[in-house]
Image (tube, rainbow, N blue to C red; front, side, top):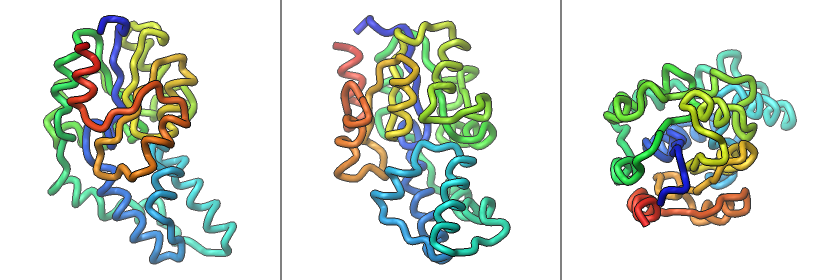
Length: 222
């Protein structure tokens, strides 16, 4: 397939299987504070958001339900999952197949904070695959679902938005890619993907949904 000049990957839940770890840890902590989210609700509302927007949403939910969060809730929410990342984090199976199947420009555009994004890629041996084309939403004023990060990534690597293909596992990410004028492929191969994710990604505007990186590699090679 030659219609695309650039392939842009989200990181969490697409390149590295971090979402399932983070969601488990954060839901447990939030439940202890009185905010009990169903797994699917948590995925639908919060996956793909910058931490700033995630924290603001949690604070708003607490206020709406009359709960008082700890003063350090922003730090406390993430206290446990980095220990698990260091011990358990892995690249999602087959990701290098998708990378190898695409001969054009490639980049990562993630809602993760810059230092954490780099560390996750380092832990899984993927940083050198994409560096220096690794972009965090720290670089833009508005995170996903706004198009800013994908537009910045396209500009930095020298690709027109309409020639970019984005691989995303979140509704917010798919919306951001579509708003940027890019083709969006949904990905459901992460450990956090529930039975309804494919439908939600399609509803958000994904041009196709793939259950594995090998399926993506086949589509890119076809």
